[in-house]
Length: 232
Image (cartoon, rainbow, N blue to C red; front, side):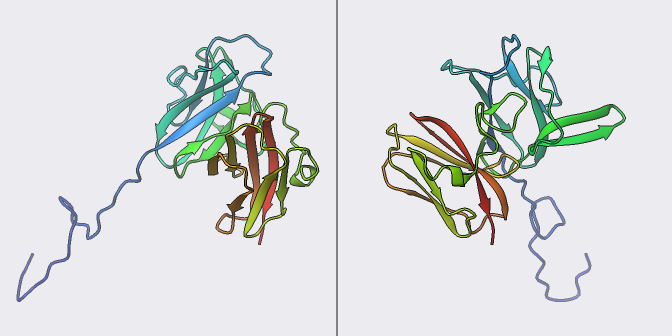
């Protein structure tokens, strides 16, 4: 560097010529969950395989400690987009996913054509317990909308579509604690709360992108899944 007078050098990052330090995004925890209750084959241990583990087989086995047939595992991942699918017993069996499902992506390369689940990770995420080979929970009616919930004996959700916020109310919340989650179309958990009081739950959506979202409510009544539209 040539100096020909008083000079204030720019602030540089340690061991770099860059004026700004480039900080890698922190890794986050992602919990993968699959409901095996409607799987008709035989299996011992489900696993999750994807671009994050090189489709390695049993590197990320799932467990079902409470015996409810919902198998899960938590993996520390970068904030990125990943393809994945569930399999079992080191690829002895694997999901055959429909390319028309909203949570899948089909890719064709020199190795063939593959349809996998896809997800964008932007923070700590607990994925819904989807049914094997489905984007929905087991037993969920994929055609059910928020309008069909209003007159049920337990929960009411309104308005739909929502612009600023929507409300979940209940004549009977059921158990003392109720898990409420909101997922976008890629399965990213954008809202999650363990509710312990009886008041209505207001969920702000004004900063969310327009589109279809999935609301899940888990209480002693069971697991409910509803579709919510966010629009301007």
